[in-house]
Structure formats: structure tokens, C-alpha cells
Length: 147
Image (cartoon, rainbow, N blue to C red; front, top):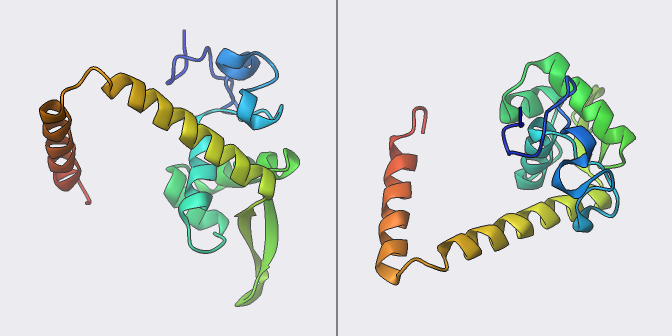
């Protein structure tokens, strides 16, 4: 059985087995870092998209997991050197989570890889087909529940 991205089975901690399609070392742009599963990728994407460091609760909402799961994802990401905890300037009892330089590089890498894959997939489309796809995706996004 393959995980949601076809990269092999996903383990209980949300990480893809054996490093996904790149083997144990991870993708070339990861510098040998293990990315993990889709939930960790969503965590990194959420932090990259945010204008400020996020609380664990905000991460849970953005990633679509409960708070204990978000806390475990943050801890694993800290251990991998992808994120860091910092004191919340408004409440010293709370912490916020931000990407490290390594986490930022990793996000840029998988964004670039996705962009290359999309470009390759769209290469066979005519300009009219690309415009129609953009129109339909916009319609889908506008109709999405909660949008």
C-alpha cells in the first residue's frame, strides 16, 4: 500500500517509509534531511506561509490535526533541525514555532520540485487549455466549503 503521494507506506508517526522515492537520504534538495510524511510537510508549509511564528494550536488548525499530534510534529521537527521554538513576546508562558534556515531551504526545495512537476505536466497543454484549467480551478476554489 502506498501513502497519499505514492511514496510507499506511511508509518504511524506520519513519515513515509524509507525516505520515499529518494531512499534513506531524502531528496537532493533536502541536504540529507528526512522530510517525513504529509503532515510534517503541511506543518512546514504552514510556517512558511505565515507572517509570524505560530503557536502549536495555530499549527494544529493549519495542518488539520489535533493539538497533541501537532505538538509531536513540532517536537520531531525540532529534533530534525527544521523548526525552532521561541518565546511568545505577548505571553512568556507560551512558545511560538518558526522555521530554521534548514526548514526554509527544505520548503523552497519541495515547492520548486512541485513547480517543475506542474510545468512538465502542463507542457502538453495549449494556451487555451491552460486558461480553461485556471478558470475551473478558480471556480473550484471559490466553491470550496468554508472559502
